[in-house]
Image 1 (cartoon, helix red, strand yellow):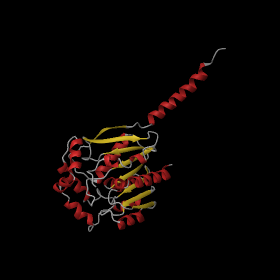
Image 2 (cartoon, chains in turn orange, purple):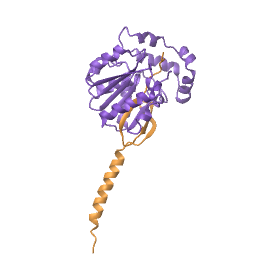
Image 3 (cartoon, chains in turn cyan, brown):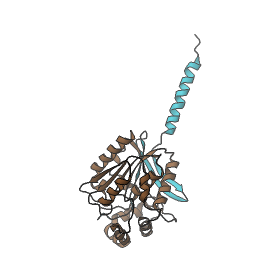
Image 4 (cartoon, chains in turn orange, blue):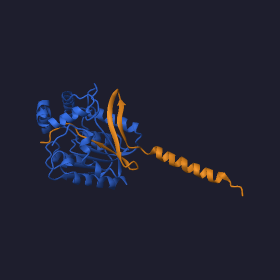
Length: 65
Length: 225
């Protein structure tokens, strides 16, 4: 029997495309510098790559009493 | 307890949210490993830097935890981008600086020699890790940020435009962000909860990390799922 390869090929292709896009949209954990207005800002991305983004911002130099 | 201000000071509570969230941290200009640059600093400048970073990372909607200066920037971001910020949590973050605020005298008097004498280890860490350290210039520059009462500084009444679920936290013994000011802030944000952290002062997340970490995670889980 002649196997209709299109039946297998297209669904696999679609799943592959979906998976590729999903992985591309996931933000990878990383760290490094970003250049803004000729100034370098250090950042890092950690935690669960599938989790929703949580921005954590530190304080400045201050006394604590 | 004190810090010079860098993402490392968040290490105490990061583990409480790391399994559920992708955590984005950044060193503000001049702080930690970031360069100071030549421009004057302001909370508005910090805000713009964060927005540029989030756009660079292609982040759409996000939530924020911000500690003191980071919290002040967080108020600004939530007020400025109400459709983008899902949930806001701040700790020890003033929202305005009134002319008679007791913190003005304290912040104005802060000088390099006092700091060096008491926090030599923190300064040494900064000078070791920053590519272009200049602590004297950093301290001088951030004092202008703290005492800025113009539109580039504290959000003031702009906090009334914050629409996302918000949790304001302060240490029970915080000498900079008073209970009265925290309560006044709560009345100005439509969907605002408040937590007064017992047995802590200005750095509750370092003094009581388990309590603050669990409150943070519980609040985020409630409003981001």
